[in-house]
Image (cartoon, rainbow, N blue to C red; front, side, top):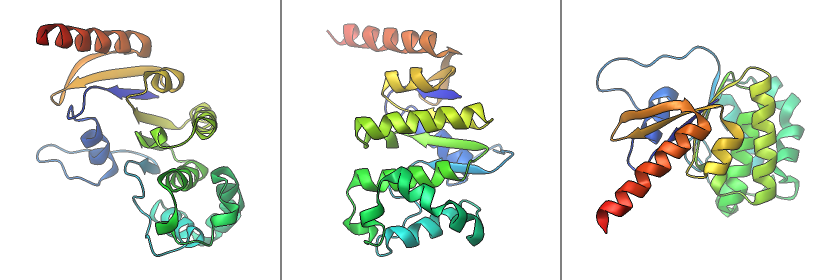
Length: 196
């Protein structure tokens, strides 16, 4: 599990989009091995006019599952998202928190070999974030590789063993999560002092 830290505009989300194949590199190449699931943008992969149920099938198919596999996991996905009452409501009527719960439930229930998560957990309530942390830790224990972007240092520390501090598209520091967070915070403090 690897956390990506840095200020807005550092390149963290761009790295995840390159890995997910959403953005093409201008030079070089990016490759990954294994089934990849990405939670990069709120509602990505969902169609607003389709119901939650229809979007589970659509999103899971985009992530590589066959219909039978989705049917076998459907109840687990809906239960994890806690959206039983709303599963037949169009996504455009969902709150941002409901949308992210459904997106996370689909992505994590397919048990990807690589999971990319970018700030989406900031939308959910505390109880849901705790369940997500538990699910992510279970996936990591089963061998899933995680790349995690968040400005919530507590979440990064709880989930990631290692971290990179990135600024202006370049790695400033790489190491254990606690040490990387300390380096990043020192850089932020120095920047604040320089402005005084």
